[in-house]
Image (tube, rainbow, N blue to C red; front, side):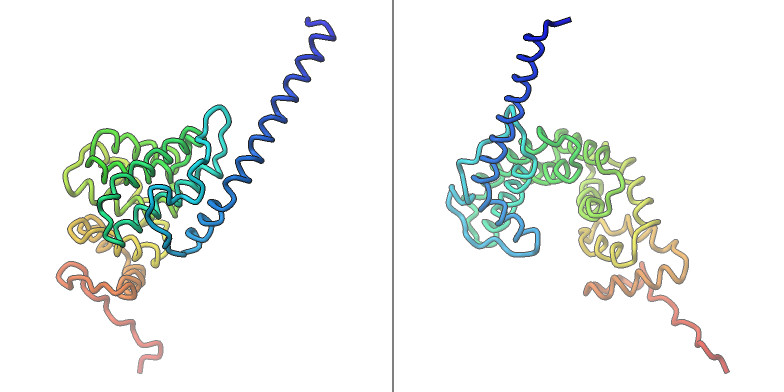
Length: 253
């Protein structure tokens, strides 16, 4: 048993460590506040327009997570850096594209050190790594981690299914089983509008994976999904997904 003075010293040390961590977090938030405001606007649908210096992040001196992790700040940095990569493409500044992807990958890895169970971050890392080097084994590993961390999160599934469908269709192995399982759960539970959104986001050559299952829907559910797909601006090939039969009149004569 430690003596009372030793125990008290230990308690004081723990308290001071907690205060230091809290102070570090407050400094982190203070320095990151403009960045976090940017991230909030982007997540609300605003486009990132202030591009693209190498120092385009609002506060390029933000500390990378080390002994102390601030997942909120790390996630905001990911949001902005992914938006920067999109903006570089939209502004035709392709010479800077590789640099923005490198920054995004670095920020994603920092976030995952803080939040290793963030299934969306694993998915975004896989997407970035595909653009950096193609469908490498590291991409498959990141997707496996995404499936493990977020197996039935609808908002993650809506982005993951079109992405993995493209990889599976192009011959990437190792993802077939979790993809099939996720697709079955999604199509069984999701609303028609969500299914239509995933169908629209899936590359055309990969839609056959979804179409084979949609044709097996009960007539009423199939009709609802078909109308939702039409509402996205896509008209399916009638030889693959035929228009549903018109509903029977409510008051037959």
